[in-house]
Image (cartoon, one colour):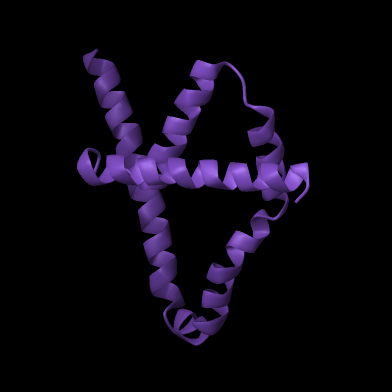
Length: 119
């Protein structure tokens, strides 16, 4: 295996370890925060403490990002397979998407203004 292959392997293992640590944090402390977010936050904090990104991690992740579209294949296949159901309920999906974006946006803006007036 070439050095770049080892970098990809080491980067992948590092990301999986931090995802696992995020899963532990989610299970025992932060139940509402996704494990991937907690894991990336832990990785970010470690990199801030180190002051730099190690070469093996940087080069491995850059190579992984080139193939990132492969992670989008399963959802794409799901949409293709479920297309008749999606098309049948397109209005409901559209309403759900619009409501799930606008309601938190409106509530967040209102809350920001309300708390800004109080402080």
